[in-house]
Each structure stands twice: as C-alpha cells, then as structure tokens.
Length: 480
Image 1 (cartoon, rainbow, N blue to C red):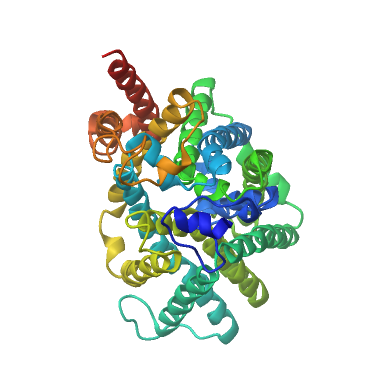
Image 2 (cartoon, one colour):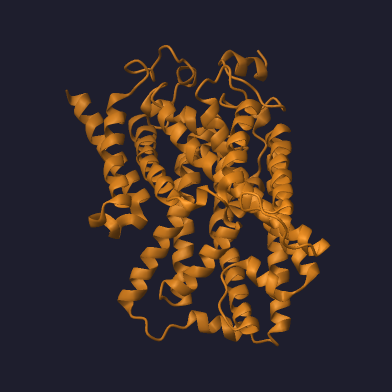
C-alpha cells in the first residue's frame, strides 16, 4: 500500500501536494530540516506586535537591561523545553495537535480543544491580515505619495485595496500546500533580520555614533533593587511564555513535518534562544537609536520609519513588516485554524476547504476590525479562550508521558467508532473533569479581581493544574 493509500485508509483528506490535513504524514513527507523549524520561531517573533512587546520590556518593567535579557533567554529555554515535549508525538507519529488530543480527551472530546484553538487562531488570523495590509498600504503611499481619501468603515480606498490583496495573497500560499508555506517562512525569517540590521545602521549614522551610549542608558537602572529586579524578571518570563502559549499547545502541527527528533530539537534550540537574543538585541538598538535621533524612546517600528522621511527606507520597511506579519500569521494562526476546522469532519473538510473557511472569517474580522470589532472588549474574550486552552496542554503531556509512556496506537487515533481512545462514546470523562476544574480557575485569573495578580501567569497555572488534576483523577479511577 502506498503512502497516499495509507492516508486515505485513515479516512482523511490530502492537501494539494498530497500532504495529509489530519492523517499521519509519511516518511517521504517529513522533509523539514532544522532551518525550517528555526524559521517557525523567527517568524513567530518577528511581528510588529512582537517588536513592540520586546522593546517595551526594556522600558516598562523597571528592570535593568541585563535582567530583561536574562529573562528573555530563560523564557526562550522554557518554551523550547515545552515545545520539545508537546512536539515529540507529532514528530514520532506524524500527527497534528487535534489528533494527539484524541489520546487523552477521546475521539469526540478532542473536538472541543481543537475548536477552541481554531477560534483563537481564526480571530487573530483576520486581525493579522488587516495589520499586514497596513504594511502594503504604507508601501503604496511611500511610492505614490497619495495620502488621505474618503473612508469606508474606517479605511480609505488604498487601505481596502491593500487589505484585499493581502487577503488573496494568503489564499495563494495555502492553496499551493505546506511546501509553499515552508518556503515563505524560510525566506521571510532571514529577510526581516537583514532589514532590521539595516535600520540599526541608518539610526547609527543619524545618531553620530551615539547609538550604543543611548542603548546603555536603557540598560542602566540606578533605582532598581534585588526585589524589583526579581519581580520584573518573573513578569517578563510570564509575559513571553504567554506570548508563545498558543504555538506551544499545537506545535505537533509543525513537528510532524520534521525529518527526525534531532532535527526538531536542534531547530527549537537554534530557533528559540537564538531568535530571542538576536531579535531583542536589534529591537533594543533600534529603540536606543530612535531615542537619540528623535528624542524619545519609540517602541513602534512603523513610527520610527515614518519619522526618517526616507522613501527608500519606507519601501523596504513596508515589505519587511508585510513579510513578518504574514509569517507569524501562517505559523500561529492559519495552520491551527485549518487543522481545528478539518477535525470537525475529517472525511469531508479538506485542507483547501478549511483554508477557505478560515479566509472567509478573516475577511469579515479583518474588514470590520478598524471600524467596529476593535472597539469592543476583544482582549478579554481572547484571553479567556487562551486560559481555557491551557489545561489541555497539561493533560496531553501527563497522558502521553506518564500514562502512555510515549506509546500510541495510531490506528485507534483514527477510529472514530471504537478503539482505545473512544472511551465513553468518544469522551474521556476523567480528562473532561480535569479540564473543567482547571479551566475554571485559569479563567478566574482573567476576570476575578482577587486573582488579578496571577493574570500574567494564567496559562502556566492552567497547564500545571490540568496535568496535576488529570493525574490524580486517573490514578483514583485505576485504584477504583
């Protein structure tokens, strides 16, 4: 039986290149080397939001620069450890996150976390399409000099044209399959770094060589104490872990394409600590240079570019911001959205169909974002979904490593009518109970004022609680 026939035998669908949407990828499809894994993290870090977040860490947390750097490195190592755990089953069995979740929550129960993850991904996919379109609009305005115009739903004609082009560009990439996604990520990641280094050089020249001294002032914090430094260290680690939380839970969506476990581990090692250090250093130098040239610490790179009054730099930066935003959109949003939607009905929803469904919602969310959606309390909604998802990570890890000793029955994972993972009509009641109990507390850290001091750590708390409660309930059931 050929690889394709084996995939079809599992009852799923294939993408345009023969890659399976949910079914296990074959040895001939595991083609991603360490550089591809590295660029997953490069693109995940290199968004406009990621830049602003990292730059603000050196300014807003009241800690010295070296403490901030140490926290970023520690966070990178911690996330690397987490994704090596969550991605191991994907690499070994070639299965994505929604299928891995079947082992612990049941063949039907796994649809719940898959839908929750897909909901978060679809929402941010639409928002990121909008933000990527602002980069294209910046490019058009830099070249043509056209500004202003009549607004419809908060956007001008150039804005709408840019939005539709970017929306269609995403469709072109996923329509061609995962190899095109990999190729785009491999190009976008290094390109963004080249342009960021170029921006640092421009600011260096305009600051008359004062860039390093300005950066040093950001590192210096004479009023800091051990207590404030430690508090800031913990806060930065919590912030960065929360930033990567979504990809941590569904990393098997990517690790299943890795050539082998060593490739996955090496890609994560190079991708997380290295990218955190390099990107943070460039963000810090850019912020320091902007402080000298413009007299204030600016954490938004688009504002820095606009103030340089350079058409050439504006064009290059617009292309860079576009590539960076599309990159993170593919990594953090598109792939989990497609897999989550396809998991609702694997035999009928194909890779392309799930991609079109995702794109439709992106068109609505992105098109109405600037004029309508952004005015509501969206952050609370998204944070709630993230906190709800956190226990799933702990449950899956405990189930895979402690209860199954990293052994899965691949056929039973795709048996929706019976088998080891069918449990009670497709639901593992033990995992569901652990999920509900842990999720209630995790969500409470978002909404209940008494737990406000834990809000930055709701994902870690939810994951730990989910794993501990699941382990306790599972042991109790075994004894019973």
